[in-house]
Image 1 (cartoon, one colour):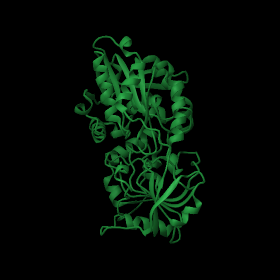
Image 2 (cartoon, helix red, strand yellow):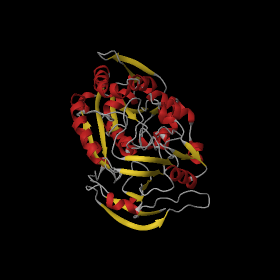
Image 3 (tube, helix red, strand yellow):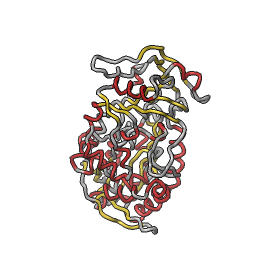
Image 4 (cartoon, one colour):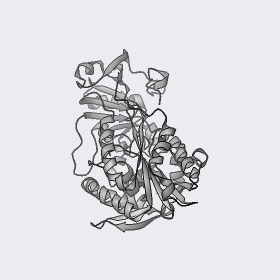
Amino acid sequence: MKVIRVRQRFPRPREEDVARAVRRELARLNLGSRLGPGARVCLTAGSRGIVDIVLILSQAVAYLKELGAEPFLVAAMGGHGGGTVAGQRRVLESLGITEEAVGAKVLIGEEAVPIGETPAGQTVYCDAYAAQADAILVVNRVKMHTSFRGDLESGLFKMMVVGLGKEPGARSFHRLGWRGMASSLVSMGQCFLERMPVVGGLAVLENGYKETAGVYALAPEEMEERERELQAEAKRLLPRLPVHEIDLLVVDEIGKDISGTGMDSNVIGRRRNDGEPDFYPPRIKRIVVLGLSRATAGNGYGIGLADFTTARAVKMLDREATYANALASGFPAKAMIPMTLKDDREAIEAALRSLGGRADGLVRIRNTSRLDVIEMSPDLAPRLRPDVDYEVLGGPYELSFDQEGRLRPLDFAEPGDKP
């Protein structure tokens, strides 16, 4: 199969000085008047691969120390990491979040305590360590959710309800299903804000190049309204595939650091939620997943969105962590292992055979968070969406495999482009 290398150009707002932005925004919260001397302040450390998360957390920790507070971090990732202390620690360490890196203790536990109920009777939970803090500063990226649609999706409210809720909170939320999650996130988040000492949040936006587009401090009383605005901007910045109809999508890696479902459902047009149609476009006939990211620590949740995979990817799976994630989310199909082939070559060939022996519309990506440089069939060029801004970097050339049948790395055109 011949492909060309293409660079897509996305909107690129960028925060040039992230450390300065964190301090500038925290100053807006007037925390000095909200925190007493020696106040123990809990910050949230999640499982997502937020590009500047270590810098953001370390600057927030330093700022709080300067105010005389005693900051600490908790593992706030719902049921990720298998819900165990060891699993959560592995996830955080893979993201570079350690006590040495952020300058504060990182407390990792399995226990969550119920803190209240919504008017509809939904129980809201909080990490046991966070529940003992004098104050909580919620830190998370704002982005589109992979399982439901709403004005608030994946951001500070979800970090409170699911991240700090640990495994019980994740179960309580996800058992509502895709309809219930969209309608209940606000009420559950408001319950958390009313019952817990949240002094504010740091919301992060990223652009389509895995760069920090902005950092925003949100006071508790403005958190819902401001997050709605940031959610709309995150949707605008979401990188997308350049065509609406694809025969075969080859994905080099999936992982929890990339998306909550390993590969972003908003990018691939598949969710496989019970009783709900998939998103379109794009409409993709076959998806091949070649491997897992290192930072996902074996959690292959989302591999069930693919049609074919490799023995290498399956070997990388931590089934306990993957299944725990799937059971907590309520979507077990996303953890089901696809047809598994010996290597990359055989997986791609099997997908082609299932399509009748050829695929005029092939697209290859590194992962769903990095779509600026891709490979695709030359025949797709005339079928690109009219709004796509792109340039051809090279080709056509044959897809290249090494002696072990592994697809050669998707090279980025400039050294500075590599994530």
